[in-house]
Image (cartoon, rainbow, N blue to C red):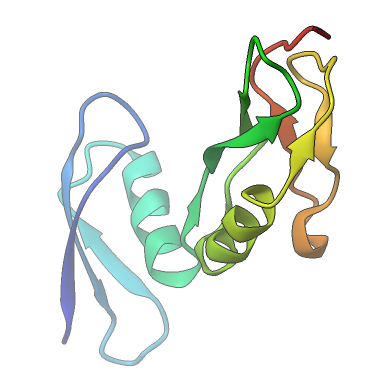
Length: 122
C-alpha cells in the first residue's frame, strides 16, 4: 500500500496527513487530520490536485511595466504550465482595474484570470 505524506493547507493548523489508497482500490484512507477539511484536502490532492495561480503580465505602461494577475479559484495542476506560457506572452494596455477579467474561461474549466491590482493609463 503506497502512502503519501502531506501537510494540510485548509486552515492554519497545518496537520501532518498520511493518505493511502485502500487495498481494494475503492477510495483513500486519511490519518492525522484534526477536522473533515483535512481528509477532503488529502483526497483531492490524490485525485485532482489544484492550485491558485499567481503571475504577472506585461503592461504598456511606464509607471507599471508588469501587472499582477491570479486565477479566481484553483486550477487543475496539469493546466498550469500552459496558462503561465500564455500569460507570459500577453501585453496589456492600461487602464485596468483590480478584479477585471483577463481570461474568462481557462481551457474550458470555468476558471478566470483576473487582475490583482489597478493600473491607470499613463
